[in-house]
Length: 178
Image 1 (cartoon, rainbow, N blue to C red):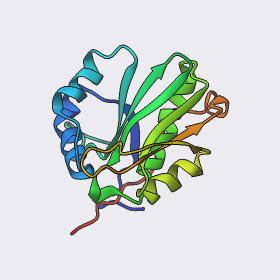
Image 2 (image 1 turned 60 degrees about the vertical axis):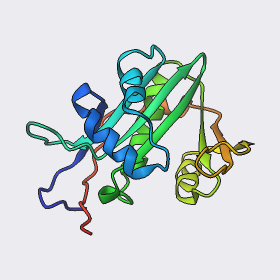
Image 3 (image 1 turned 120 degrees about the horizontal axis):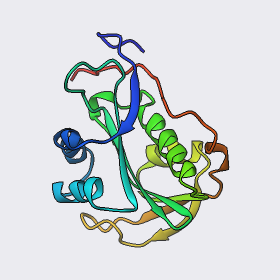
Image 4 (image 1 turned 90 degrees about the vertical axis):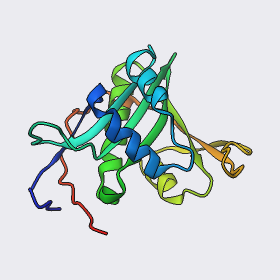
């Protein structure tokens, strides 16, 4: 997967400087994007929350944010609050890398399982989560405000395999034109 610059990605904690890019990715990815204040709260005030971003590994100066994931540590269960990849970099494994690094981060803080909600119609996301061992746990009827669509609750019941994983993910991003 060669990018014109031959860059590889890494996953790192989000910084305040990443907010504009993350907010733009969110706006392009979801019918009802999070308000900027929600990302700022998650980043600076939420004691159980954390955000990670995928960026080119060899970034110089301001790094391009390729995608992000939001995590919450809730007693012994981690929750994936959000996950998105910039439209120009989708289907290159960046979402997979973010999810893996998120699960590693949750396992390292003592979380034993993970959960998330996903639109019933989002087959691509469901397939990604199933690849990591998430299974259908339940349904929240009418969860999404924009169209009343149901959310599927998916859970991963054992984070133990992620507790000894490495934390640097490398993958070459490609920018898709058009």
